[in-house]
Amino acid sequence: MRPVPSNLGSSARPLAEVYDVALLDLDGVVYIGPDAVPAAPEVLAAVRAAGMRLAFVTNNASRPPEVVAAHLTELGIEAAAEEVVSSAQAAAHYLADRLPAAAKVLVVGTTGLEAALRERGLVPVYEADDDVAAVVQGYSPDLSWRQLAEGAVAINRGVPWVATNADPTVPSPRGRLPGNGSLVAALRCATGAEPIVTGKPDPTMHRESVQRSGAQRPLVVGDRLDTDIEGANAAGCDSLLVLTGVTSPAELLAAGPERRPTYLSADVRGLLNVHDRPRVTDAGAVCGRWRATTGPAGSGPRRLLLHDTEDATVADGEADDLDALRALCAISWASGAEGPVRVAAAGADGTRGQGEQVIERLGLADRSGG
Image 1 (tube, one colour):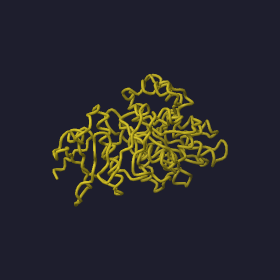
Image 2 (cartoon, rainbow, N blue to C red):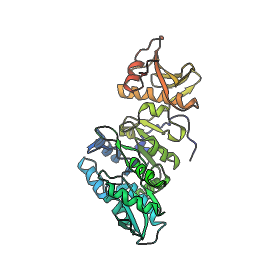
Image 3 (cartoon, rainbow, N blue to C red):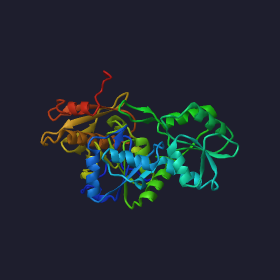
Image 4 (spheres, rainbow, N blue to C red):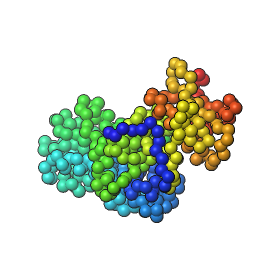
C-alpha cells in the first residue's frame, strides 16, 4: 500500500481531463436500488464527452454484465456489457488461475456467478458433490438456506472458499440492507472457516478492472471507505469519494490513512470539477471561506472547530458545505489521530455564525448533550 497523505489532493483541471478511465462503483454512486442517483445520467454523458472512458465496477455479483449494462441503459446511462466489471468476474479469474479446466465450483449466489465461471472455463454447480473443487459466494437477494447449507457441506470438507466481497450492507431507498458480508458471516459462523475475499478492497478486483478497461491512469469513484477507497489506496490509485451512498461526513473525518480519498465530491459531478487542496498552516486548515482548527483536549472524542472567516464571499450552499468538510478533513487527518470527533462552530466574531447550519447539514451536529 502506498503512503497516503494527510490531506486531500488538488487538480487545476477537471478530473475527466486528467484521468483516462473512471472506475465507477455502482451501488450508491450511479444508482441506488432501481433508480439512478439524481443527475448521474447527464453527468456521465458529459464525462464521456470530455474524453474520459467509463468502467462500471461493482462488488455486487448477482447479475451478469449484460444485465447490468441493460439496467444502466434503461436509467439513461449509456453502457455496454464489456464496460461492466463485477466481483464475480474477479472471483472466477482467481479460481481459474488455481483450478484445472472444467473444474466444478459450487455457487452460493446467482446468475452473475454462473456466467463469470463459464467465461473462465469452470463449471458452476449447486450441490456439494464429492468432486466439487471450490465454493464461490456472491450477493443474491434470493439466497436460500439450502444454498448456504450446500456451501457449508463443501467448506467443511476443506475445499477453497472464495467470497466476491465482504460488504456488510448494500444501499437501498429504505436505507442499509444486509449485503454479501452479512451472508458470508452465516457460513463463517457455521463452518469456522475464513473465505478468500477477491472483491474490493482486495487488489484482485482492481487488477481485473484495469485489465478489462485498459486504463492507463484510472480514477476510482466510490461511496465506501472500506472497499472503494481502501482498495484504490492498496492498488496505488487515486480516488474520488462521493457522498450519495453509505459514507457519512463523520465517518470520513474519523477515517484512518488507508481509507482516505484523494478527492471529495457530493456526487459524480466531481468528475467535471477542479479540486482545491485545503491549506494547512499553524492557524488551522482553510478551504474556501472556512477554517478548521482542533479544539481543546479533553476526555472523549476529539474536538474540531469550524470558523466562518470574516472576509470570504458566501458560495453556493452545496459547494460551500463541501469546502467546510474539506477543511475539517484536513485538520482532522493532519492531527495524526483517528477515531470519532465532535465538531462545533465559531464565527469570525466568536459566535457560531453560519457554521452551525453547515455542521447541521453535514450531519455533524453533536446531539450527545455534552
